[in-house]
Length: 145
Image 1 (spheres, rainbow, N blue to C red):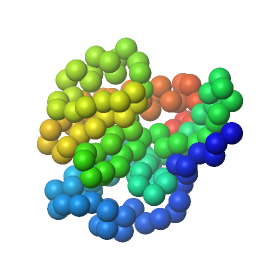
Image 2 (cartoon, rainbow, N blue to C red):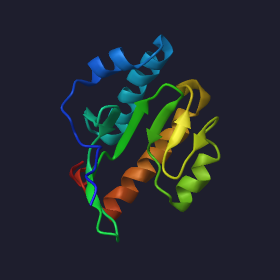
Image 3 (cartoon, rainbow, N blue to C red):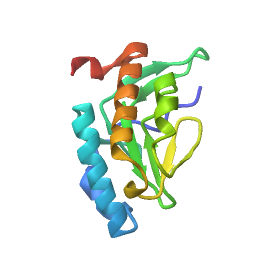
């Protein structure tokens, strides 16, 4: 079975942003996302893999037998867009995302060009919904908060 690539690394988050984000806007938005996600989750930011900033952690296990650990909330300031790892497919999240703003989406990842393209109050509700979902369905550090 393949080993999960996204693991906690211990790398410095600020150093990562300062060296990886390719514009001052992306750096500013990254530091603002850190403030918001830290406030919403109650967890300090930590590096997961080479380019994901995560908050908290949980253990997942799929029916296939694949299992691992992942951040409860997270993002990456990728070149084309921010990748936001904050979505759990619940009825409430499906309703909320319609009001998020300008974004693209894959199965579980939301892509945003810049923070001003979205409504951060809606993002907060989506993050809180995701935390609740993960808490109810996985072994989660969020139970301690």
